[in-house]
Length: 176
Image (cartoon, rainbow, N blue to C red; front, side, top):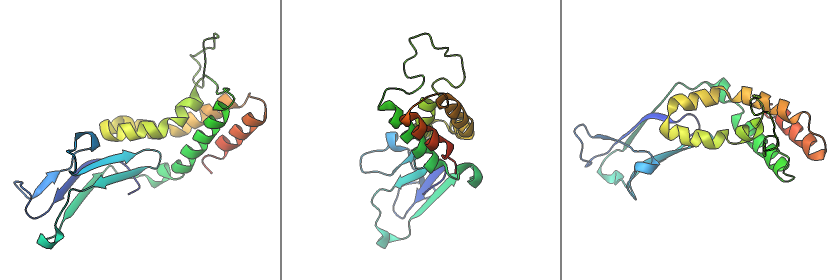
């Protein structure tokens, strides 16, 4: 299911021990083997839910998912933008020319855009983690994505060569 991580997941089925017939579904790292669980995949902006075995012949199974309100405009195009930023970084990784990659030579790390491409390329993975642990930080990272993209474009702009031109093209078309 594309969207945001859940604020609550509950399931109910006949024969499950519970005071009201519903139980909370734990996230992946807290689930028992073979039991119900869920995880969030940040790069694809997808919630995955796995249910325990349920015999539907005994009655209906209900799965209730609650998330924060979804802002379609904010989520629109992010899967492609994540892919573009990862391709741009991978392209520059091949020649070990990612800005901010090795700053031991006295680069000024106080500049906001230093390492921006590396940060940008890791946003999807960070969303996977934050979707399980911290929804407030998840929202902050998601809402700051376009600013981080702008910083990465500034960071890559002065680079020269074919790899740099390809990275600039990927980043400039990331949200199109």
